[in-house]
Length: 459
Image (cartoon, rainbow, N blue to C red; front, side, top):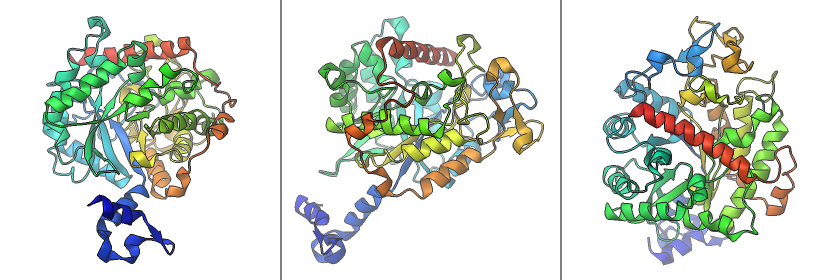
């Protein structure tokens, strides 16, 4: 479409877009498609394609929380599956389609590794993929390793490989530039905030962009895992550099930001969820947009990694807002608030963490009780050393249903931006005004250790 035609599409005449009144002077179908896209919510989910025949070592060691519960034990509805099997992928795709998930951001640990083989040879070739979109989640702590002194030698060839193997696939998620219609492959990058603290972010981003160009893909759209707790100060220009070199920012670690560990594993109230999203998260969005950087809100159902790494001693984040709240009340509240922060510059995307990360119990994938019990009878808080006394229910499809209900009726009017002054007024809601350096480092080190362990498991 020519620039002249695109301008006509935006003209409002008599209260309606010109495209609706004069098809002869505008590509009406193109205008309508663009308008519909901006009025829809795009739901993405972090997807982990690492469950081979050993269920990522789960079937041998039962190294995830639900399998270690008692009275009753709980398991995926599909059992401890091998996600290279076409019927497993097809079922995951069906659940996703039925409940509004249109995008999987898939964990990727390097060429030839389990995740790479599963995505390339099994997910992208599955006949049920249809129009479902895929994007790569670049696991920095597996590719830029602390034990290798953060050597960056893998970054550029990694991106050249991703370009050749993934970015040109018809199902790969592309960001369309509103100004010229150019498509850019979208790459999600884990823990860019850690790379920033190490002084490596600019070099890594430069290597990524160059690697993609070496592979023939041109410019790419990089989403950084940059958002965590309170936003940086506008008074320090160096803290704003990530917004200038990244194309979008998001918050992978919802657990660490919601700080349930400060209230015995509960967020505590619905109001605190509102404070978190409309305070800290909206402030992040405002800063990002002021730097022409897009923003992607995230929602998570809860967190508990004690089944796989009990020695770390993390306090879990309950899936309930408070002890007597309903199962899934935290997820419902997070979706209701998160959907108000979506950015039209990022296709109104909201990310779910996660579809199937069983090790950290952030999954929304359906689950059942081993003894066949359902509803209230399928709840347990045993053993206490793993549950921290929190109650866990074999929730079946509850989370998929919550997701569908909270995203199906979304309206673009819900995403009206607030001013920075409005955002700042929420900052006294129990979360504090900003993260101290020591708090940031505490979480960064912990998450790095976690992912490092997962990388070792794959080697």
